[in-house]
Image (tube, rainbow, N blue to C red; front, top):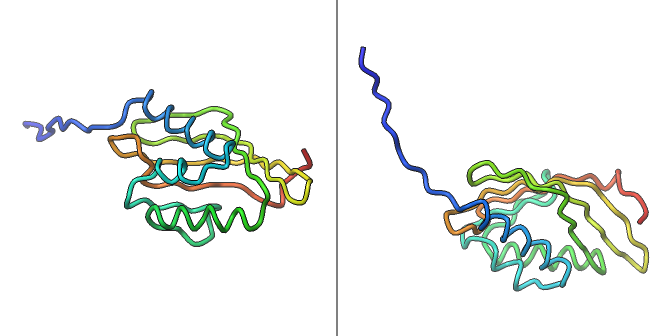
Length: 136
């Protein structure tokens, strides 16, 4: 019996390029830079934060999400606690530091991303639970 398997090359962004995008993602939050964050996403992206809430589509959707989040919190800082890169997908454990009215709370979460060949975010999903927030 002859196998019908054929090797097909799958292009993905390099781990270094993906890590650079992840670092730029956390820097955009740290610097409160909406434009820098939106530029990290592909034109046809999907962003769900947190999972279970409506998905935002395209860069305009990501920008609208940013505005909605900033209406609820004075500042949001994402702290990368590692990154597990598998091909063009990443699971990134994070701490979310949200400040509201001078008080800061911390939530543990995981951001899951799928990247295109240029290391832009195509699909992003954030997993976190407000009920598990703790004071900073």
